[in-house]
Length: 183
Length: 317
Image 1 (cartoon, each protein chain N blue to C red):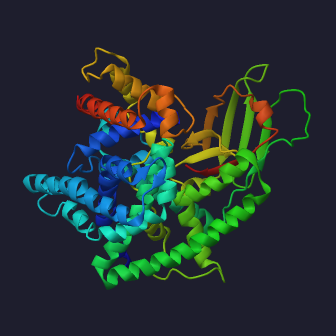
Image 2 (image 1 turned 90 degrees about the vertical axis):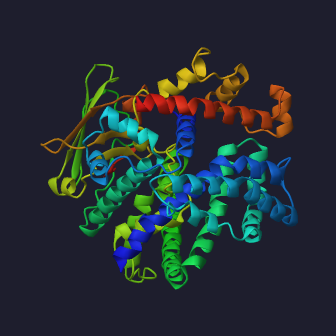
């Protein structure tokens, strides 16, 4: 959803809320928190959410609270996963090849799945203590704000996904750093 | 004590805040801005005071009164919160004084057709007035909360300064991304708490010892939080029905849709939400499009009002 489409959606939903004199919360905090922690809303629940500004506000609050708690826990337990430098800007490595970066609490593996390097599989392996402190899930985000991967790790502590953009990943890895943050 | 404190911040006041935003910045903002801004310039303080008083008397007041009446007939009973909202409009002169401080920015944005920005500035300005009004009503308890907030503001300023220093060596998208943390309430709450616990880091937050507490204060006091905004929140937008965008677009694009948009309303919505025109003066707008910006705003508002009940009906089905 681009920004203008987002504003249209928001304005229509505001108009729906404005016509409702009370707008009660339509989903419980427990259910919303479950959604934040990775159990997706059903289609019917999504429709209830769209009809209620109060419920959207509540979801926003719970999501921020979960992230704030995770960030505070990371600080308190001195996790502080550092950003990972990918490839140096001066690196002129001509061939597209797998990249593996190992940090203190997570590692990132980028594997090309075609010869031209247009498609990539991205794997993040996350240390168990970090997973415990981050029930809302993770984002792998680069130093320019692009989210490479988001979600909850599987039973093996892995977050998996694929490069989804037209831009060449191989060019981008020479420019940015990657950082794991609470989602 | 802290439990009560957070209940207050997370409960009642946040409901009031959302309702005030809806009434002031969404439903009736245009009436006020059209009145106080002419050709991108704000009127003088005397006219502004009069305009605010008229706005409250003719627009906001009757709307709130009708909502109070509706709530009395519904299940919520008389304590639905709308009456408390109405009490906060007791000092139009002070409200006008607050608006005057940002009048130049506000009217420049409105005069250039940057409506979302103008509404944002208006809400930010009114928020400060409402906080003061609210804490006056609350007496000593309110003053206590206000003191806590002042401490948090001091810590926020340090966090901001430190991050801006860190971003000093950066440029382009990396700098923008780094500074966007200043708009992230979760990051701010954790950073403020860490700053308060750092030896020599500034005022300690004895009454707000947890990250939940700091976040609750940010939600209570920062104008843009807790008002249902999702324009810049992809994670929230991702929780909405997958076909919502398609549904809304259908009511705009299909001339036979039951929303019954006129051709002019449809064109206004397309201009507003699908094109990206540069900001321009009212005169340039009229020269470019052949009708006034006021007409454009009215058509957009009418179009959205026509679409909303049909989208709502689809969501209920």
